[in-house]
Image 1 (cartoon, rainbow, N blue to C red):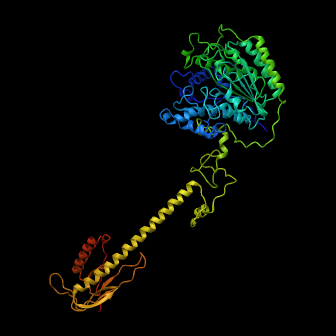
Image 2: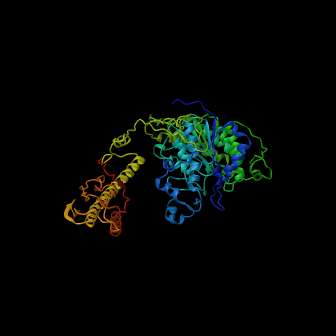
Length: 615
């Protein structure tokens, strides 16, 4: 594997993490992470590391370890509807210690997203050490919340590291046993878990010395049970030799260090007596191995001490020694009355005798000797990663696309954005990369080329399928409207012929004829009378000819009546008649149509027939 040049330390922080609250009286307070970040910024530590806001982990990423049912429950339950999930709450151990609070799933996403993204950057060699103080929630199980933890970001981060590294070492210095992480990797030799914790009538009640793993993972779970009041010197006397032996024998490719601060002196739920520098010594010692390291938070329930310790340990990671004088910050008043960056030990009695600690240490070394030296891993192809560039936040620095999601985009060929110019790949105006496996369906090609759509089209992408369905529905509706219009036109023309014949009969006597299937009288005699009783000025009797054609299509011309009477104004849709009598017939026809509910009357065009010049 070819790694890019390393870039030091990556630090993950989301400003929203301090907005979440477990509820009144609950000891877990995410606000401590915001306090820690304030110290990190005001001490100027940001100058020596790259600061990122990780994209929150989604449901699919969380289910790389947790069950689908459990993650679905976390995503749907809220304080408003929690009564509807009473059965699920009991099943997934969500209740008093792990309450339902506003934004629960988003909070879990922030925690897990930082750890997974930190692990991904370590995989690519983009940093030596990645820090996520919002992570380290080591109690969460596969389908169960536990110990204020809902989603186990540590397991998700280790799973990401295992994509590249054959062996990962997990170290836990939280006062509570890291039971969730140990349980997840209890049967494998690819992860060795080492936990230093309080044991005996103390949550979670696990982590006995004899809990060493099973099957292929036997002796790859290391537990160092401790008693109340352990101080800096005693802790160092067991931590350093055990970790050194583990690294020497196991030869890890990467390290995950959980820095739970409830092992500090004066913690509300803790019973150890470590100072801030004694706690930070563990971070400094692990850093000396120069292995890719993911540094995480964890427990810690005295907020001012937790933020002090993690800010100081951030300085240890970046190699900057920060003094005890605390700079002014947004939470300066929290650190009174001394306003110093320090957590001192108390006069608490140390119940861990040197004999007890030596006995446990010897047993741990014996168990390590039963493991295989640097267990090998079967070679396999590592799934391709997405490239991470320095300008990946150019469009929106608050919305980064993590490398683990970039390969999921499938873009059809010849698809462009709207603008004319583009400056980078994927920017507006540039051609998107084509997925080699993409083949447009025949129906899509036919449609894009303007051809017909087959009766049973091949499956199309979702948007095109919707467009074609709407297009077909519109065409059917238009055809129905054309048919209805054709029928109305036929009825109108039939009524027009009848009205024309009737009008001709009114003008004068004549013989009965049948025109277009309609019986009527044709005028053959004296001219039509006007309303004033005067005869027409025509010297010759008018001859009326009625023509009609059987309608076959909406475009069939309407029946036309023509008159040879000179200088007569004849409405073309009423037949041959005097202008005044034609108006009468027109009015009668309109009244008949109104009664029959016919199509609204159309205004007829008037045609002026000029007399023929015989001179």
